[in-house]
Length: 193
View 1 (tube, rainbow, N blue to C red):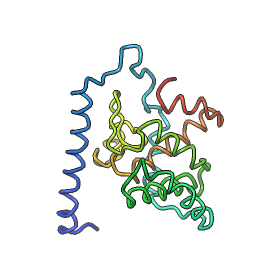
View 2: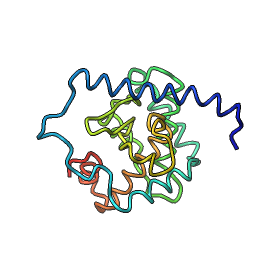
View 3: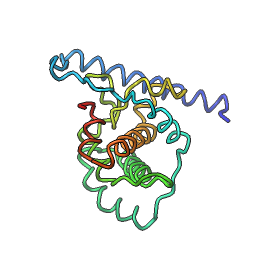
View 4: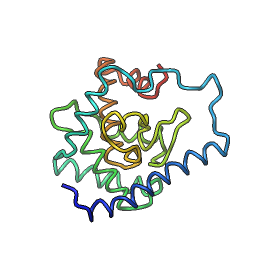
């Protein structure tokens, strides 16, 4: 239950997130970052029929409990590598925890956490405010229609947890669809198939 005071504290953050998202879009438009006609995404752009249920299920189960030893090794190995890309330590640790947790989600196909990090690197360069030419938002470049379809706010795409959660659900879906062929699944994720 969200109290009136908690809602008031969240409201400025939501407005700030929306503002940052608008600024990122405006900046991309101002710099003339429009893809040439031959590079405009032509794929389904995350509109596959069964994908909604997969993402809705991932969002409804927001917490997962990773193995402590594996997660300790993960943090020890990966945290120093991300210092330059994600300078804020709190954000960096949240990103690492979320990626590890979502990659090892109980009851779901395990994803290599390094693969998830590679997708984030390619899709957004670890910039949670990134907006693509096609309008995809955040770390894992989620299409902006998803929050509205799932009863969420669009600004949540710039938050680490919801974005990585949805991105991992989409990646799992495409891996299953492509019989675990990583190359084909990544092509679908990217929208190039």
